[in-house]
Image 1 (cartoon, rainbow, N blue to C red):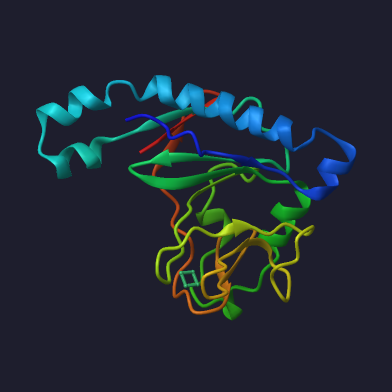
Image 2 (tube, rainbow, N blue to C red):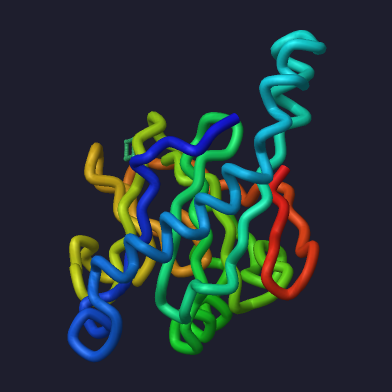
Length: 190
Ligand code: FES
């Protein structure tokens, strides 16, 4: 399986003002996705040896996350779906952990959605009708109120910094795929 060229990396406007610019984010995304593409080169062979559904279930992607800075996110394709890899800031982590679970539509503690608080891995497909939400950090303020996570422009669903549904028609949180840390700098999704 190869990674499509439209994979991107996103940062906040604060970073754009004080740190690397958007071109830098795009470069980081390309570099990380390149690593994923190399790791996934066995896919065509697997695909030719198994029924499509079995091969799909086996598909994995390895991603080098070493270049992703706090507040940055890259998007890779895993099993044909956009998959978000976000390195959360301390504020995002605190915001996710401080939520009263009783107010959530799909109650789930942040600790059940991350292996390491700094890293949030999500399947980037809205649980309403399948659009791809965009990251709505505190800069864009597409959400009202601003939950600091993702906004789905199709029908207005809003997700928080743990990818949990907070407002709008989506019934469930953004899914967390199976993944594991192969090292401090490489994760395997799937
Ligand atoms: S598909 Fe996301 S809100 Fe409808």
